[in-house]
Length: 296
Length: 320
Image 1: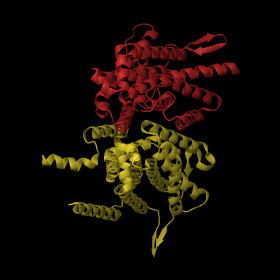
Image 2 (image 1 turned 135 degrees about the horizontal axis):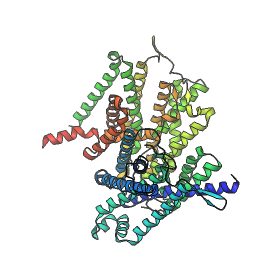
Image 3 (image 1 turned 45 degrees about the horizontal axis):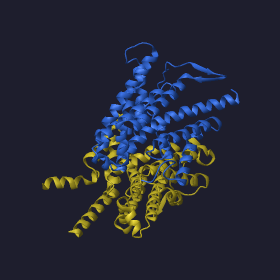
Image 4 (image 1 turned 90 degrees about the vertical axis):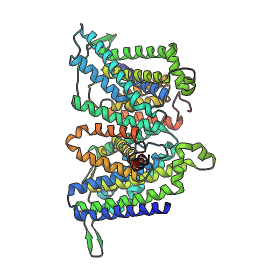
C-alpha cells in the first residue's frame, strides 16, 4: 500500500470511527441535556443493537423478505425499535425516580450496565459472533478502494445526523425538547409534557446506539462486552464537545475518531486509547466545560 | 440520652472487636478466613472511597491507587529487598502523594467530568504498568512478591505462613481505618465535607476553603487504598495490571451506596453482605452481576440511604 493510499484509508477509517462515535455520543448528549442523566449503560444499548442485527439477520430469526440487503435493513430497523422501547422502559421505571440527582443516576446506570452485560452473556454466550453484512464488496474510486460496509456506516451516520438535526430544529416536539433542556420547570409551566420528552429522548438515544451497534457488528464482531470501549470513547467525545451540546458532540466525534485512527495506523493501536484520554485530560485543564459547553 | 447512645455504640464496637480477635481461635478453615480477609480489605478501600463520595465526587480510580500501593511495596520488596513492614506505610504515602498531585487539578471538576477523568487515569495507569515491563513487570505483573517477615513480640513469633496472621493484620488495618474515619466524621472536617454537595458556594462564601477539604479527603482515601494494595500484593504474592481496573472501582462505589454512605459502618456492611453473597452464589457466578445490579437498584428505589438505615425504618414502621 502506497503512502497516499494509506493516508486516505486512515482518513476514511477516521470518518467511520467518528460517525459511529457521534451516533452513540449524540444519544448520551440528548439524555444528559434533557434529563441531566449520565447513562453509563448506553454502551449496552449499542451492544444490544449488535445482537439484534445478529439474531434477526445472521441467525435468520426474521423471515426472508427478499434480497439480503432488505433483510439486513429490516433487521436493523427492527432492532432499533426494540432497543428504543427497552430504553423507554428503563427510563420510565429505573431512571425517572432519580431525576435530579446526578450521582444516583450514575450509580443506577452502573447497575444497569452490569445487568445488561450479564444478561446477554447468559443468553448468548461469551464467544465473539462475527457475521457478514450484505455489503461485502469493495468500491473503487480512482486508485483507491473503499469497503462498502464502511461506506454504509458513513452514509447511515450522515443521514441520521441530518434527520436528528431537522427533528430537533424544525419540529414542534424538537422545540419542546430544547425548551426542557433549557429549563425544565419553565417548560412545564408552558404546558410541555416533560414525561413525554423524557421518554422520547431516551427512546431516540437508545435507537441511535442500536443503529451504531447493528452497523458495526458485521465490521468487527458482536459480544456482551462490545459496548464498554465505545461508551468510554463516547463520553470523551461528549466531554470534549461540551456536555449536552449536539454540535459539540459532532466536533468531539471527529477529533476522537480521527485521532484514534491516525494514532492506530502511524504509532500503534495500544497507544490509541491512551492518547484519547490524554487529549481529554488536556482539554479539561484548559477549558473544563469542553469546546462548545458553557457553565451550568 | 445521647450519652447512652454513645455508650451503646462503644459496647457494640468492643463486642465486634473482641469477636473479630477471638474468631480465628474457633475458626480454622482457611477458606472462611480468606473471605473475611477479603471483606476487611474491601472495607478499607470502600471507606476510603466514601470519604470523597460524601462531597459528591464519584472516584473511579480507587482501584488504581490500590494498584499503586501494591506495585510500590512489591517493587521495594523485589528490587531493593525492603521489608513489607517498611513497604506498607511507604505504599500508603506514595498513593497519597499521587492523589495530592492528581486531586488539585481534577477536584475542581464535578459530576460525570470527575468520573471520566478518574476513569481516564485508571486506563493511563494500567497502560503504564503494562508497557513499562522493566519496572512493573508488563502484562503479567509482578510475580513472587515475598510474604511479610515474621514479627517477634517477646518470645512469641508470628510468622506469615498461614491465613491467621494475615487475618489479624487485615483486622488491625481495618480497625485503624475505622478509627481514623469515625474521628474524621465527627470532626469539623467531616462536617465540612458533608456540607459540600449541598452548599459549596455558601461554604466558600463564609471562608471555608472547599478545595483544600476535598483534596484532604481524596488524599486520605487514597492513602488507605495504597495500604490495602500493599497488603493485597504481599498476601497474594503478586500484583497484576488486571487486578486494579475500573470495574473494581465501580464495585466499590456500588458497595458503599448499598451499605449506605451516611455512616462509617455502611460501606463495611455493604462489603460484608455483597462479598458473602458473592461466595454463596459462586455456583451461579455468571448470574452474579444481574443479582448485584438488581439488589443495587432495589436498594436505591426502596431503601435510599442503604442497608444502614434498615433498623431506623423498621423502628419507624413499628411506631406507626
